[in-house]
Image (cartoon, rainbow over all chains, first blue to last red):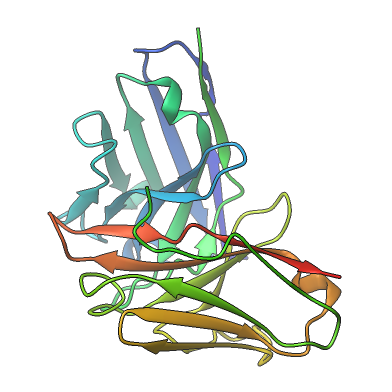
Length: 120
Length: 111
């Protein structure tokens, strides 16, 4: 069964750090590009960061550049998001999503999401 | 703030056809493919349409996508109650350093 399971969310104070994880199963993780996408409460979707299969190509939204770092461990079938200098506006459900390799970006598998709340 | 603009809401009765627009620019829809996602209440988004008009296996053919110039559309024909959800378009934008952008989202209500 193809599955993505996020973990690591929680309550953190402004300026704090958090590391999200995404465990992949049921497919060859190392073949796929991956992304983090977030959704603030009651709001729309916002793309956060993107990493290719070999970690040689990474892109991030301007809103998180310099604060968030995406990474992956293909040997452990895992995707990560290191979030530093967190702000209230980073409060959201964070989803990891799979993107088949190729020229077209299409997130075909999503995790259930993990909630991050930044508040004092 | 998203550069892909969608109407905030759309509605129809069962069996009707509903169309959702997604307006962009030459740096996104005008030069890259469009993807559509469906998000049912309380759940994660799901892929609905990719490459402007392609349906993944398992997506009913009631859903169709199209693109013209810097705008795209999602049509739902034969609207069903289970289609009540939020719908988002998305595309890469080649401006600045390049980024992926989702549309503002459209809530579809089945009356």
